[in-house]
Image 1 (cartoon, rainbow, N blue to C red):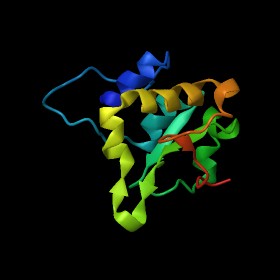
Image 2: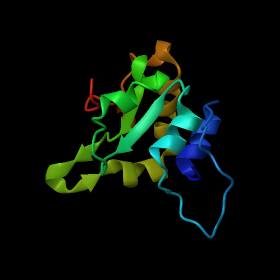
Image 3: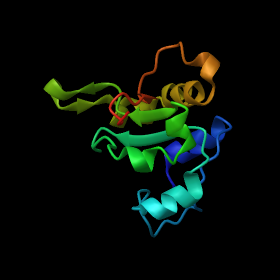
Length: 129
């Protein structure tokens, strides 16, 4: 809703239907109800549904209400995870090199570029089908 990823999404000419103005009194992550998510994001072209700490979405009846799910444009920001080393490159290198993360967002938004490798954000292969 309000974080560096949301700014990179704008830089890639994307639109976040959940975006809110910056507010230094609030952190950058918020809980949102399924009803509000459906009301605001039902017609989004693509979704980044989860990160390395989130469980995969498994409720197909809910997912099928999203165009991004029906059209196969679900992504997860779970790339570059090195579980055996307890390392998540996303939280280290992506801060230093936001251009790498921006590249993933551009590939996500432009299907013709998806044949190029993703680094941090990649198609979500764990979402229910």
